[in-house]
Length: 111
Length: 128
Length: 100
Image (cartoon, helix red, strand yellow):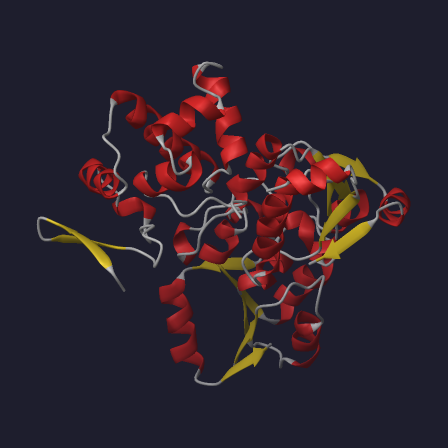
C-alpha cells in the first residue's frame, strides 16, 4: 500500500491519494497534502478543512460538494457557503481537494 | 453531474426499502451509500424501513467493541442531502419491541396497509 | 455442547431450529444478528425466556452494544458475555454446533 512519509511516520493512502485511516491525520500531513495539490494553506483554507473534519466526526461521511456548500453557508454564512468562494480556495473541487487534505475519504455521492 | 436529469425535468419517485439489520450483513450500508449517491440526481427519494430494517436507525449504536465502522450517524446526514421522506412500518417496530422514541432520526410511522400503498405508488423501488 | 446462533430470529429460523433440537442443559450463545432475540419486548421474547429454563443462554455484549442495546434491555435469565468468555465457553464445552 502506498504511503506518505513525514519524519519517519507513514500514512497509508489509496491510489487517488486519500489516506486510509481518518484517525491518523495530523496538521503536518494536511500541509504536505496541500503542497502536493499546489495549495498554499491560509486561515480560510484551514477553516474549511477543520469544518470538514467536524462534519465527518458528526456524520461519518465526507459530504458531496452541494451538501458541503450548504452546510458551510449555515455555519459560516452565505459569503463563504457558495461555489465561487470554495472553488477559489480549492480550484480542483472543494469536495475532492479539501476532503483529501482533511484526511477524509473521497466524498460519498461524488461521481 | 445531475444537469441532464434536471433539464429533462423527469423526476421519478424512488423508494429504497431497507429490510436488513445493520452489521450482520452488508446490505444496510450498501443501500445507504446508494441513497447518498442517488441524491445527486435530484429525484424524489423515499426511504422505507421495514422488518429488521428498523434496527438500522435504532439509537445508541456503539461499534467500538466489534471493531466495525458505526455508520448509523450517517442517517442523520440525510437531511442535509435533502432526503427527508423516511417511513417506518409500525408493525415491524411492534414485533421488535422498538418505540418511536428509540429511533435516531425523524420519521413518519405508518401501518402496513399504508406502507403497501406507498410502495405501490413508486416509479422505482430498490430493496435491500 | 455449545450451540451458537448468529441470525436474526425475525429473518431466519436458525434460532428456532436450535431451540427445537438442542439437548436440555446445553449452552446457547446468541451473537451478531441473533442478539436481537435476547432483547425485551419482541414477539419472540416469551419463546426465548422459556428457553432459559431448559438451557444456559448467553449473548455477546459487543454485538449487542453495536446494535444499540445494553444489558438493561436483555431478557432476564440471559447472561451478557465478552469475547474472553466466548472463548472460555468454547473450551469448556468442546463441541460447538453452529446454527448458521
